[in-house]
Amino acid sequence: MNFFGNAEAFRNIFPAFPLIGHQPLAASLSECGSRELQARNRQALDGKLAYTEFLSLLIQDEVARREQKKFQMRLRRASFRTTKTLEQFDFERLPKLNRTLVHDLATGRY
Image (tube, rainbow, N blue to C red):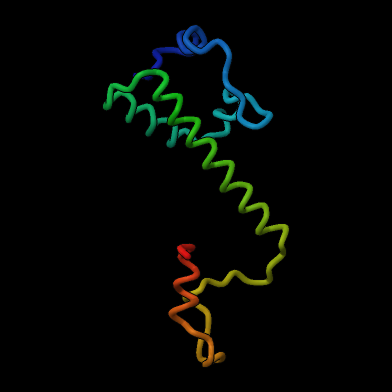
């Protein structure tokens, strides 16, 4: 079962898709994985969500997907030789560096 019943019903309810960036949501949703769409569809059916709530979830997913895609692209363009995490950092090589302060700063709470 589909949340909207069929594509025609969806178009009748949402005749003009909102734009995300410069791309219509409808075109963008086709890029979304079918598992993610099915999961949101199931969530909407189980939670008896309104169409607008369902659409809001899809838009949130799309925005998050685009942000992740931008981040991945920036990492590729940066051409870092290796990817390192803070946990992999060798604090023994810089004994004067305050490990606790570095970890606190990494949380983003100042």
